[in-house]
Length: 297
Image (cartoon, rainbow, N blue to C red; front, top):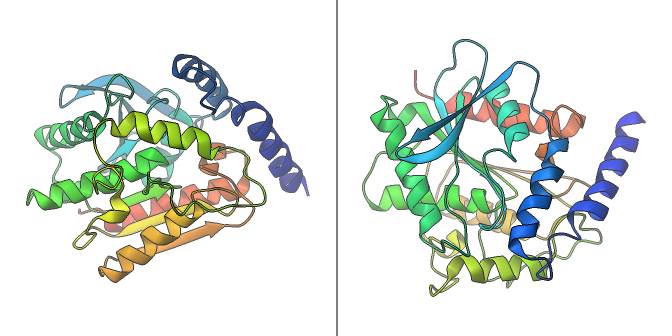
């Protein structure tokens, strides 16, 4: 009963405080400030530690839990490619560090509109190469991300494959945004977080002069063959439900080991409530197990 009440309260909070900010009417600079404050409610587990660093020349936050992390996760934060940072995502990365047993490296990749595509992808790849330069083997690195960061995680894996580079051990995405054309958005009865008008504006700001169907912008239009094992988590109360389901279908068609988990009555990137909401905590446990299962020794 208490968890049901908490779900209701969190849903109302997202709907009343976050969703109204994510609109084209609010300047991006103001969105960044407000969302930074809103993410204060997403708290890491006690015992998580954070260090500001640079990896591959990219500013980043390194998150760990415990004394002997095994492997690394390159975590790409969400925010429509226009807001968000490694600081806003400390709740998610703290809990993922705990469940995966890995060091979580979250780059502050460049954001649009100041830096449109391919800046975010270039920075993600530079951070990947930086982890290799630090001595991690590809099989000791997983890639993960939420929302736009989930789409970026898929695009990075595709780019590495196309360059005949070694691939990460696995990919984990929460509510991935993989079709910036928005031609097949889901229409839930309740959407507590996202507005299609906001994501449409963010898509145009990120793509700049590039086509929204470029597979490195919208991975659903690309070839997913040869990608590492993929875990997709999504809520049923979000406009990106179809993106997640289409990604799973496309990955399966290309013989990628794929697991899709749809969490009924939960919303966009509900994992931010790990440690508070039991189902979010359980989802993060599943993500950590997926990562650990595929890491090389």
